[in-house]
Image (cartoon, rainbow over all chains, first blue to last red; front, side, top):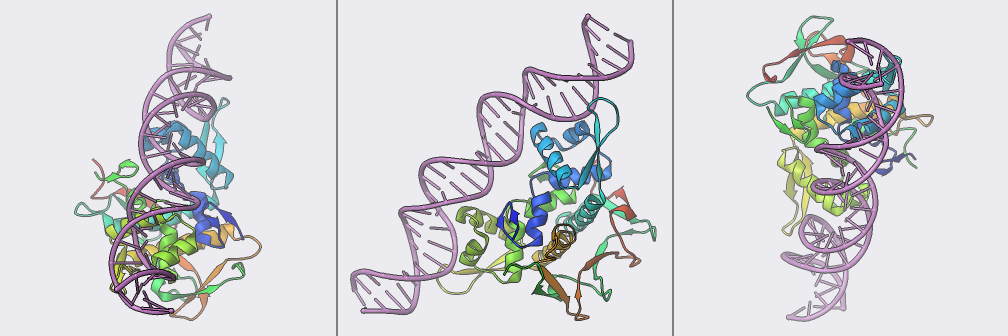
Length: 150
Length: 150
DNA sequence: TCGTGGAGTCTCTTGAAGGAACTCAAGAAG
DNA sequence: CTTCTTGAGTTCCTTCAAGAGACTCCACGA
């Protein structure tokens, strides 16, 4: 069983929260995704305390979600998404989709997503990797997996 | 522009985090999903402080994600997912999918998902609601939407 | 050689989480 | 009836994390 911020848990949700569950972490990833890649840019855009930004960036780099790249000789770095981090951004898209649907209100969603493959403004849809039909929380049974607690 | 925990942000990710971004909230939703619906069950399963559990449950009920149902005359309640909450569990499935993929290690994933429609052990796959092709973070352009900040 | 800008540290204050004991109401037990 | 027990919280106190803002360090460029 694995140690998480929330205790000893054999739970992929708790483990994921250990990586991006702390305050600001998802917003930092969003910002890196949209192109704010430097410390000062992130700090200015988010209005986060510098101390916490330092801690979060280190944590995300330690977990292989962000990569620190020097862009000059002096201590000057840019943060970039790794493959692992890019898949977290998928999660952020789903999160944004929920917010667009339930919290946007009159004004409508603050951002739109244009899908490269079809060129249309669209949104993500959750489908079964096996049969391609819609797959939502009510469409599944949960079974213990190989890594389940005993 | 909307007030979030993280400042004034026109961002559906920040707004969603306002609902489920606090520590424990996603795990509370997961527990309610899998059938821990009462205060004492949640407290015992999560090992969360009673004070924080009270705060989180109230917050989730206030945001229409959980519904409080009396199951007896006395102060005895069960918490159930609303439609809004059930769609958050979709998000949790995606979160679990990322954890299964990147954090499960040798032992394999702690839980498996059997899809009702096809009966197979499967996982969620993100697809474009418009064309049905895969839709990941790298497959989209972000555009300002109608609710964007000016 | 002095100033500037990026990327952090340091320190202090405030706010949130943990833990454990306490409350309250209504059946159940005796 | 009176007491016991149980579910669902409250209260209080301590500890840890976040916020704010000043300070450091270092390489270039004027």
